[in-house]
Image (cartoon, rainbow, N blue to C red; front, side):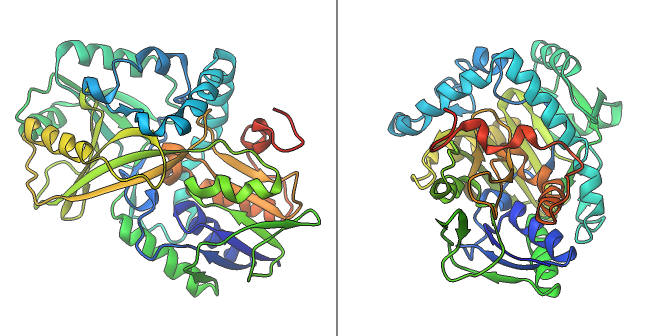
Length: 409
């Protein structure tokens, strides 16, 4: 049994804490915020097993110009944050090379293939909280429907499968939207968390019931004599799982973690009797709409920038305009949210044991897949903490791929 200090109380950090406690370890979680304002608690609730292809790809580079925010798309590179996103973009272009893209796809395929089984193994993930009922993707024009179906059909979707939406689903989509719905596909083998607040509460209650401790402080990391230390907290191991803030935490160990805050936005409204029980992606608008109990959320945007920069109200206004143009039965006042996904340039997470500080573990950089991959990441981290071989090859997620002080460049 080991004592483990976890820096970061998002979905990955809490999932790891639960798994480590169930394995018999002592755990303290350090989380700065009381408000559950990390990306973990404002995402689309989508367990995205279909997203096998890393976004670092030639296809993404080719489509970037038409996807920019100024042209009505979801991608924004604010000039005020050029110092953040330009170095990231250079690394992104290198990671998009076909050989690296294929290797990244294989690595993600292995993780995503275990995602839903790991959710189903987690004792805190009750069947009413986590469902594997798939999701819908819809298009508004014949041209975009044909192109979208062709693209998805030709893509590697791992364990997820898709087929044309049935007549009932199409009828429900057309009743939901005032805009025309030209076509849609139904995904099977994907899932949804039905209530993110309940998820956070279930995890926190499980951790406390198992004897874990949650302390609301930011946590810091120093390295002495080749070992990581967290001031004020003694322990055998340190796990960095602090999302977009992880870069500064692992730097004292000599690691380079070129993470960027990939900021997303959502709006929520109270809605009764929403007719479609699964998430719906309106792909022409790069927007996903998710029902959460008596509320419905619309989310979008990939804004590469600084984690603590002020939110851009135009993003919320764009979401509200999309909802109005589609004629969705959502009405304000809306709750507005912005959060930072932790993204590394190759769109692979960092999961492993440090080769620079012998007692340092890390699990961060899950980009759009933090919710999806949290339970399987927790199982891998638990194996590392017990000095066992993980059942999935985690070599592709080693931080040394980015070099570091005294290491490869």
